[in-house]
Image 1 (cartoon, rainbow, N blue to C red):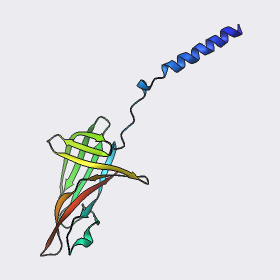
Image 2 (cartoon, rainbow, N blue to C red):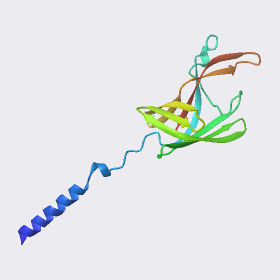
Image 3 (cartoon, rainbow, N blue to C red):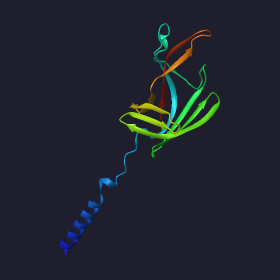
Image 4 (cartoon, rainbow, N blue to C red):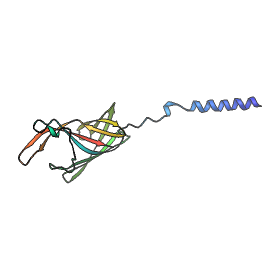
Length: 154
């Protein structure tokens, strides 16, 4: 009788082990999934005598040349919603996304495309855009040309 109990226990154990399969495990969630808030703009590429502003972070929502804010909700189904606030107006943009290595590409429904780089350092997760050209007012009579990079945080 003991032998039958051992055989039964062994059969149940094998049945339990065989039901576990890697094919049933869910795919890990991408680190870019979640809500991203525009944290700051990062300035670069300014020439003398304005090199002192290279590397400066600026608040894009409360700045002299206009206000800009964005919140991107990246979903697990490969869709996203970008809520944009600019100079008193509010709008939504939607699309799909791709993530490879550390590169996130947002493909907007209107045909536009943006690329960001994902990083995580000491628990701070950031998405940084490619740089774009910007002209900043330096005084009431002069401007300076440089680059602006958007930095989002989760």
